[in-house]
Length: 466
Image 1 (cartoon, helix red, strand yellow):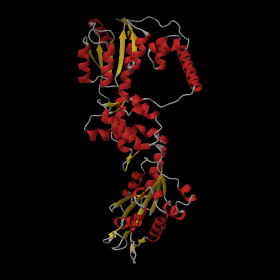
Image 2: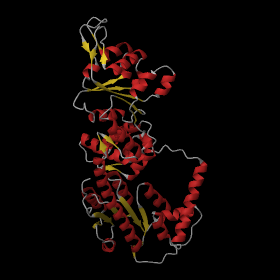
Image 3: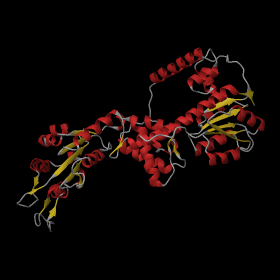
Image 4: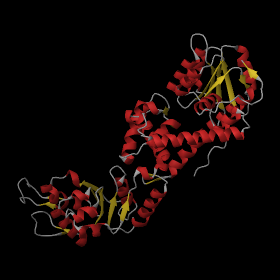
């Protein structure tokens, strides 16, 4: 793997407050290594700075003339949803706090703001922003080194599949690839061909589900002039086109039984007979077949020949479902975003954390092909350099998760227990408990009331700005 740059660039913090004294106090108090601070007392100017400089963190007053902090938040979320925005106000209310969090704010602070906790919180956000930058860089490097013949993945299921491809490719004469629709069986077939001794030869594809039954034999084995109505000249079949190469028979479970018998003879003898011909022709072809059907069931129902199955499945490779390798999602997402960004000529760096979380919740019945369609659509729709939830197709914008009442009760109980444990660890200090839980103090207070745990904050007073 290529060496990564040692230190990410400094993180930008933008502070917007119509009180110049507060700006000076906050910029001095929050100064720390790895953080560059920009300030403005004009929210409209602040938005202009944001558009030009794209700071990772924004600290803004809620109540300001002409443009409110809530409007600033909404505009920033439209432009760059991954930004951490902290709202400050001396006119707080539970309703406003909840509204700001719903709109994407990372925190909602009451004035006067305690400098110590705020400085610690900004430090956490700086650390997280640097980690995200480094993570994106590492993911790019990992993606470049986790692509095998066009196949992207490093999960246990994928490692097993790739190992079978590497071991079988130099030797196989026939191979069977199984797996659900959209799992990338065609990529496995291409990988087998490219790593085989006939990689320089032709690679020919036949989709068995798209061929009319009466034309199957002609397509595969060819025909001679006059062998049937419309046969006006000799025509070689796909086996002859694939001579000294590979023939990929996709959806082989849809092949008619009569054709299966003739295919078996070609595989056994490496010779074929064109339709209407008397003589046979020798061919040297490796055959890779793929199916999303259960061939065992098809054999039991007399729809697929058992002897052909055993001939094809000397090497059997299963393409795993995306639901079984969800830890490959970040790699696949980055790979596809890069491809569609180049295709559309757009600057797209990746997906926001909440968009990634939404994709992680999905069951992916269409597998990698469905993910490709989702990322392609989102890359087309986004107006930012990060794909967010609102860029996803409508059915993914709202998580389709049904939770039973009993499950809700369990979750509520676990949440209450975590809050109690955090308060005990923090000695009753709500700011410290919120830090332990990685939530804002206002959000903690809301949850305290929700669980009937509300109590006065035992934290000591500290320096304040406001």
